[in-house]
Length: 351
Image 1 (cartoon, rainbow, N blue to C red):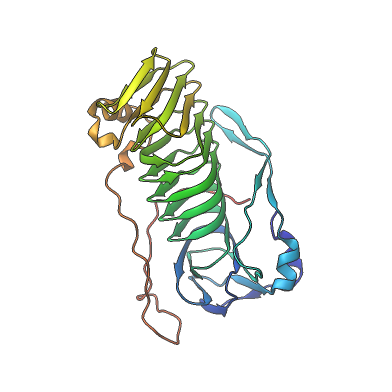
Image 2: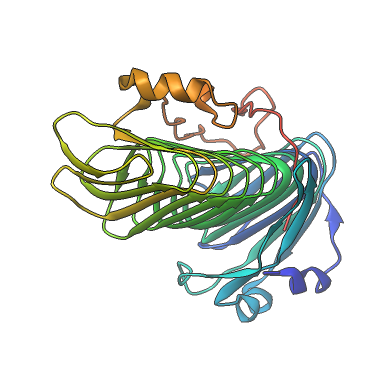
């Protein structure tokens, strides 16, 4: 695992409830949380601030220890979980990392339990989070991100860049985010993208459903695939959509901006004169393709409201979380000064 070998280079020290560390211009932040809620936000300061309701172990590694050990790709191990449907496995795969911003990278590594909020510089080169049980929220970050959870949900709010995101059982939700390249997968958890833009995205699930609502696609490939869940794809802008269901059906709902052809199980839709290639596939569920937001398509919304496998109850107008601009100070923020997100409870584990 990335940076795992760095853990043995120094002895971890328990941090205080509030710990502020000076870092270089493009640090790497790696957090392991066994159980609890982890919230990471950006600020315009050259420090990493860790606030926790319980002590956490923290290491600060200099670039000489970090840079030689940053690989060119992640090796994602295979995962198997027990479910009511029997064992469900996610295969081993690799994820190629883009070049990190900056020339030197020190690292902050934290490990613990509880409710943890971390402020990181806006110029952070890479953010890595492993949460076993609880929830992980990443707000207002641009860069390379990797998140893994077992029984935890993951929320990405106003996030941009390239990332790998995996939750075996929890829900993955992204709001008002823009992805250069995103690989996201679940075993049983649902996925919900609201108001997002994607250049390249691959989203797969075994038993979860996938909603990409009121989303935009830029030149690149987009693929949404689930074995036993449903797929709902709401597009703003141009796209060339291919939708297929092996044992369910495909429902399309466009106004005059799309040309649709096909049959009840396979349809091709040219939206807005065409554009990036987008595929939506379900082996044992149904596929819904439509323009814009689901709230403008009562028929689609009605069908999906009857599906327990699709998180349509969370759809609706979303606003990006405000960028935090703390006033000048020389002391760590108090609990009252810090904004706290309240993510939905879920269950999880780490890479």
